[in-house]
Image (cartoon, rainbow, N blue to C red; front, side, top):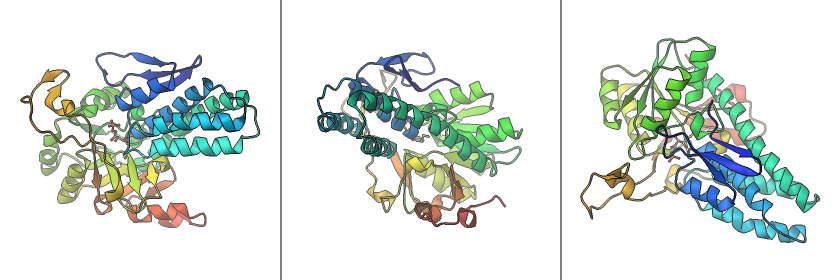
Length: 355
Ligand code: MRU
């Protein structure tokens, strides 16, 4: 499994996903600003992966702070966290990571500044390691809904590259194929405009030995109509309390098409991607990216100069289109997701099982 991001010799090493699969190159970040730049420029992308990058960026920023007191240290760390928070607005994992680090700092206030700098490195590494375990757990729950012989549609990249490893949407695929010996195949939407499906998902799955077929985004509906897709599994950048799902632009179209054709539409959602503070999907800030991503393909202009462009990076799929959310705690109906907040909830009573 290729590493997306790691802390190595006092630096953050980030795989530059913007040039994959043509080049496999790591960017060396010695400054938290470089980490922030990497998140903005999609050197690292995918909700859990940018959460990990946020934590490592903060740990990196902390190393350079010179402070006489803990109060002074924490004050100087604030702008680092603010800059990281401002990189990308839709995936809630960045805020989740910043909040986790803030809680960690509060719990370790009594330590020396030098000690806390070391502890922050460890905490960011723990976030990465925990993420891999969470994904495996998502995979175990989700794989129950994958049958021998199934063809699975996925959109964008919610694979190993988008996480600490193993992926979220890819976890049930890997678990079904590798651990349970089910024969499956995957159809990957290319995912315009940045082509995460073509460049990343197909590359990753080929490396994992899972049969994968690449299609243009426009092809998915036609394949559903021909009966060539059994289920869809996608990731999420932010799922709100009511089960609405923000994910890569085009996901909504896939979900509506699945409903039309009676195909289950599943969302792999680690709890770090669920925003329990937000009531519904219409409140999610949707990132708009530069027009160049649409008017040019790999530096080659394909649209006329001066054309007006709308480049929304994400859309929101209403909960009513989501068959089930695969989390590390089980598979749940979208309307039951809010119950996970309650300490006294009997998970077994709300877990979904395949029919
Ligand atoms: O713009 P990106 O490439 O960061 O968008 C990524 C997605 O939409 C993924 O599906 C989502 O972050 C889930 S990743 C496990």
